[in-house]
Image (cartoon, rainbow, N blue to C red; front, side, top):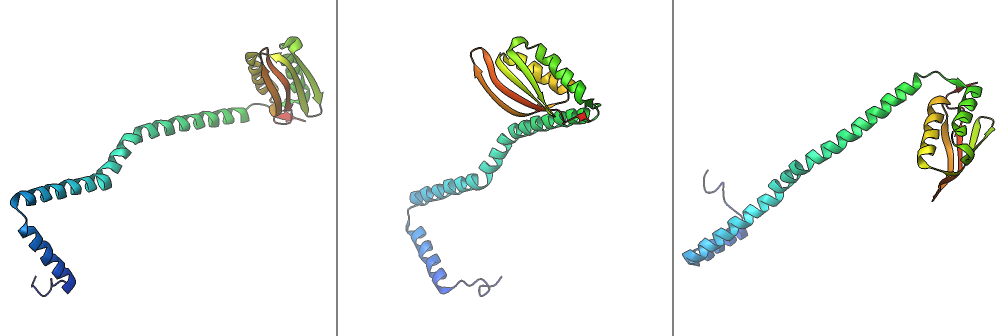
Length: 173
């Protein structure tokens, strides 16, 4: 290219000439130090803008992928469970009430069941977490009910309070 095509505006050309004059007036040792400082600064800027973000992505990606895989597997298990529950035959309200009574009888004197239409209320008094979990699992599988309200408190003897379940979730009329 010719000199006219690369001509800089006057103020830029003056600044460039001042910088060249400054550079030429420096001793060789000082030029070496300034060049090394510029190289270090340039390397640091390249590191900050290009290398570090890529490095961070490479470092964090495996952990994020593991977390996402675990979430996907849990969602697939829940979807399979949901499909399985859809294929299960519905139970009548009488069968559901009998299954709930049977599960409550296993709690002994620590649980009392009362039926009110399409809802059942279980009153608990000192039920262990394992016994409550067993009751909930049996109620879900045998009676096809779902909890709709719970007012439970945990004390030294176990859970105390009320658990209300709906018989209409899978029950046939």
